[in-house]
Image 1 (cartoon, rainbow, N blue to C red):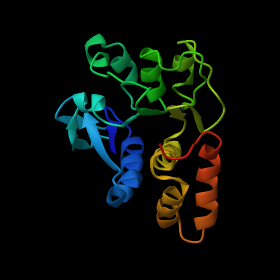
Image 2 (image 1 turned 180 degrees about the vertical axis):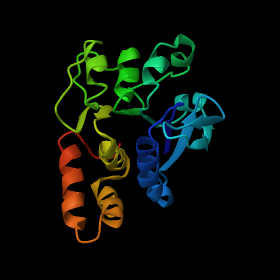
Image 3 (image 1 turned 90 degrees about the vertical axis):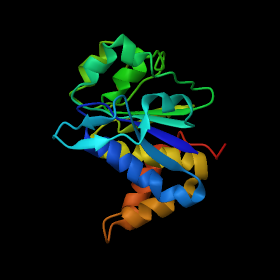
Length: 202
């Protein structure tokens, strides 16, 4: 299964890189993430320049789409031409958003009647779009998930791995990357965050 990690100019490195790095530890099992960008090169909020691995149109082909956040997300949702390139289908795709990425899901009408998680700075803008924001790091309903707080990107990746490959695969990945001496705590915390909403592999 292919995962499009949508990454715009002004992106937050923690969102795109943590999610893609964790997911790509499952490549041997057929799950692979690609940094997906609207232009050949994007620059992070800290000035890191990254070449996209796939163009934006890849989102229509991918089985999973994760939308990262950044300092220019409000510009993204105001750009009709850019938003029109995000043709997503929650009936056949897993769709997740990190922090201000919830604004993109709201703009696409994918959060209608569904609460969401986001970061504190993005919260008023997400609420202004009529979305109830939860005081939680992760929430999912069906094939749509949101995560709030940069380090909650691990929960979004855990959700993707659990939904596609199962909890055992997610546990293996988390155990490997956990801080030494905190393996069980790290694994249990991440799985607890997503377990209520995760289901068996499709």
